[in-house]
Length: 130
Image (cartoon, rainbow, N blue to C red; front, side, top):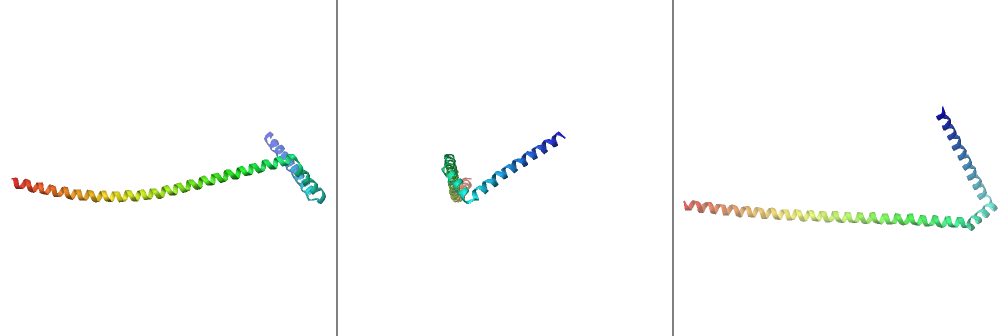
């Protein structure tokens, strides 16, 4: 029961806050849309030191966010370029390794053939000595 009444109080408070916020927003829109009053309000806002400071802070914050985004984008682009370059160098390295493997394989085959001929000659020499 106590839990239900807390929820009801919370909902009432939330509803009241939305009503007050709606009233303030409505009054502000009404004030700004009135031709004479709207111009005066805008002039007062433009001349207000607090609004200038808030505008400057907002501009600095926006500039910082944009700068951070540009730096992050640049880093990602550079990292992507490095990965692409490393991958192409890796492929080149694999091709070089494959070529070197084939060369070694051919050289090994030639050495085996040469060793086979030497063994045949040694066998023939041993047979002739008997």
